[in-house]
Image (cartoon, rainbow, N blue to C red; front, side, top):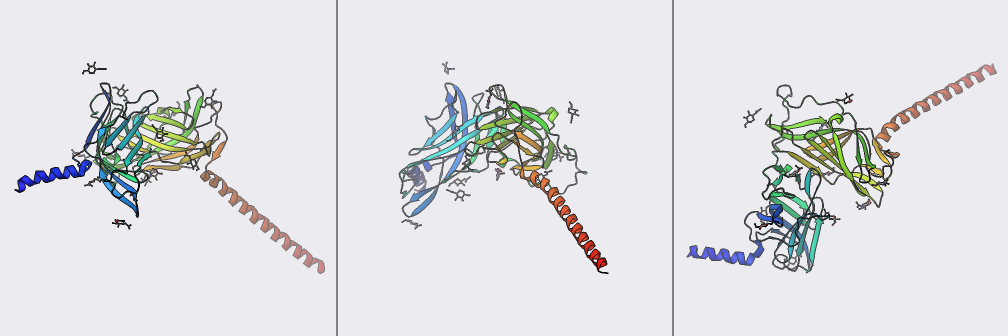
Length: 415
Ligand SMILES: *[C@@H]1O[C@H](CO)[C@@H](O)[C@H](O)[C@H]1NC(C)=O
Ligand SMILES: *[C@@H]1O[C@H](CO)[C@@H](O)[C@H](O)[C@H]1NC(C)=O
Ligand SMILES: *[C@@H]1O[C@H](CO)[C@@H](O)[C@H](O)[C@H]1NC(C)=O
Ligand SMILES: *[C@@H]1O[C@H](CO)[C@@H](O)[C@H](O)[C@H]1NC(C)=O
Ligand SMILES: *[C@@H]1O[C@H](CO)[C@@H](O)[C@H](O)[C@H]1NC(C)=O
Ligand SMILES: *[C@@H]1O[C@H](CO)[C@@H](O)[C@H](O)[C@H]1NC(C)=O
Ligand SMILES: *[C@@H]1O[C@H](CO)[C@@H](O)[C@H](O)[C@H]1NC(C)=O
Ligand SMILES: *[C@@H]1O[C@H](CO)[C@@H](O)[C@H](O)[C@H]1NC(C)=O
Ligand SMILES: *[C@@H]1O[C@H](CO)[C@@H](O)[C@H](O)[C@H]1NC(C)=O
Ligand SMILES: *[C@@H]1O[C@H](CO)[C@@H](O)[C@H](O)[C@H]1NC(C)=O
Ligand SMILES: *[C@@H]1O[C@H](CO)[C@@H](O)[C@H](O)[C@H]1NC(C)=O
Ligand SMILES: *[C@@H]1O[C@H](CO)[C@@H](O)[C@H](O)[C@H]1NC(C)=O
C-alpha cells in the first residue's frame, strides 16, 4: 500500500511544485553553430522580496532543473558580449553577460528577471510586473582557458534579491567543447585554515626570504589607439598575499615587491575606463581606473591579481571592482609619496609607495599638475606647524626680553 502511494505522492508534489523541483546543478551550453562558447553547471537559490497588499514578503526559490538556455543567449561577436540567458518557469530568467581582457574573463553583468504575476511563487503579490535587477559586481572571474569552480555558497546582492550560487563550474570563451581541466578556484573554496600564527620563521623552511624592503618605483605607460600616451604611472608596488603554501602545508602570508626591471606593462584606455596590466613572471596585476564624467574625477575602481606561483595548490585569482582609491581630477595627475594600503580582499592587499599616476587626459606624454593626497599634505603641514610654533616661541621670548630690558632701563633712569 505505502509502496504504491509514495511514487504517486511524489509525482503529485512535482506537479504542484512545478519548477520548485530541483535535483542537482543545472547544465547550460551556449553554442554558435557547432562550437561551444559557454558551458555552465549552476545551482542557485534566489531570495526575492516583493510587494504584497499589507507590506512585503520574501520567498526563497531555487533555480529549477527545468531551466533552459533561452533565445537571448549568444556567443557574442563584433561589439556584442557573450551571454547565457537561463529561462525558467512563467517568464523568469537569469542572465550572465561575460567580458574579458588579456588574462581573465568575468561575469560583467548579472541579471535576474522575475514575473510577479506567477502566483505559485509570489503568492498575494500586489504587482503583476516583470522586474529586472542587474549588477556588475558579481566578483565571478577566472583566468582564460580555465574553468571557474566555486562549490561553496557565494552570495550576490541585487537590489531586492540575493542570489546564492553554489556547486558552480563554468567557462566562457571556450577553446574546446569541454570544460577545461585547469580550474580557477574561487576564494571561498580555497583551503582557508586560519593563518598559522606563531611558528618561528627560523625553524621552518620558508620559500619566501625575509620581508623585502620598500619596493623600487617603476615607470609604466600605455599608448592609446591614436598612438599617443594615454596613461602614465610611476609607483612602487608591494603585494601582501595570504595563500595556502604547497611546500609548507599551511597558510602563509607573503610580502612581495614588484621588480620594475622584470615587469612589463600593457593595457588600454577609453573615454571613461583605463586599464594598466603589469606582468612580472607568473604574477599579473591589473589596475582599472574609472572616470566619473559628471564630477570629472577619476579613481582606481578595480584591482585584479592572478598568480600561478609554483608554491600554490591552485592558481590564485583575486579581484575587487568596488574600490575607490587614488582619486584625482581630470587633466591632473595624482601624487602620493606616503605609503598606502589598498585593501582588496581578506587575502590580498596592495601596498603602494611614491605613487604618481595619470590615467586620463595625458597631454604630450607629460603628467598634468598634481593633486597631492591628503596624507602628503599632512606630512608637509606638520613641519610647518612645528616651525610656526617655534617661531612664535622665539617672538614671545624676544618680546619678554625686550620688555624686561625696558623695565630695567626705566629703573636705572629714576635713580
Ligand atoms: C556541424 O556539424 C555537422 C554534423 O556534425 C556538420 O555536417 C557541419 O558541417 C558542422 N558545421 C560546422 C560549421 O562545422
Ligand atoms: C538552497 O535552498 C534549498 C531549499 O530552500 C536549501 O535546502 C539549501 O540549503 C539552499 N542552499 C544554499 C547554499 O543556500
Ligand atoms: C499580511 O497578510 C497575510 C495574510 O492575510 C498575513 O499572513 C500576514 O501576517 C500579514 N502581514 C502583515 C505584516 O501584516
Ligand atoms: C552591463 O550593463 C550596463 C548597464 O546595464 C551596460 O552599460 C554595460 O554595457 C553592460 N556591460 C556589458 C559587458 O554588457
Ligand atoms: C587560450 O587557448 C587558445 C586556444 O588554445 C589560445 O589561442 C589562447 O592564446 C589561450 N589564451 C590564454 C590567455 O591562455
Ligand atoms: C540580502 O542579504 C542582506 C544581507 O545579508 C539582507 O540584509 C537582506 O535582507 C537580504 N535580502 C533578501 C531579499 O533576502
Ligand atoms: C588621442 O586620444 C586622446 C584620448 O584618448 C585625446 O585626448 C588626444 O587628444 C588624442 N590625440 C591625438 C593626437 O589625436
Ligand atoms: C599584510 O596584511 C596583514 C593583514 O592581512 C597585516 O596584518 C600585515 O601587517 C600586512 N603586512 C604588510 C607588510 O603590509
Ligand atoms: C605536506 O603534506 C604532504 C602530504 O599530506 C606530505 O607528504 C609532506 O611531507 C608535507 N610537507 C611538509 C613540509 O610538512
Ligand atoms: C635594474 O636595472 C638597472 C639598470 O638597467 C640597474 O641599475 C638596477 O640595479 C636594476 N635593479 C635591480 C633590482 O635589478
Ligand atoms: C559620479 O559621481 C556622482 C557624485 O559623487 C555620483 O552620484 C554618480 O553616481 C557618479 N557616477 C558614476 C557613473 O559613478
Ligand atoms: C572590496 O573593497 C572594498 C573597499 O576596500 C571592501 O569594502 C570590500 O569588502 C571588498 N570586497 C571584498 C569581496 O573583499
